[in-house]
Image: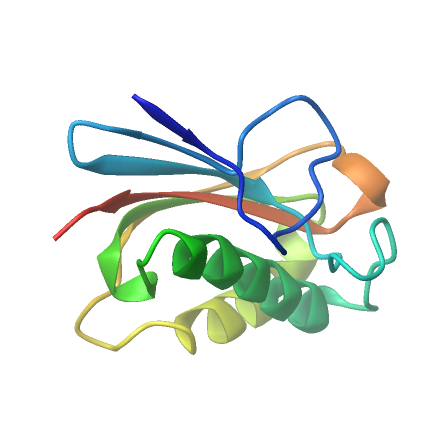
Length: 127
């Protein structure tokens, strides 16, 4: 197994690696909607937070020479499921090619770090 911390990647808020790689799969830790430049500072609204999370995931993937086209599974956690599901879906979908949508789970949760509205983790497969 390889444990990865990405230079310039999102600052971990707990003891974990940005990603762990084993047997051709890469498991990327859930990302929050803050930026490395302003940890804990969140943009307003689900659309902006979804974009920020996806951009953070792209930074981690780029540090591993991977991209969103390598994603096979995502897990999405929403604190306001009913209110934010539709807008999150539209924003999330814009990051993937229409014919390359990964498998996915989306669940409602009672709370996330920094009172974020969303967190996403993912699994990739190395080509």
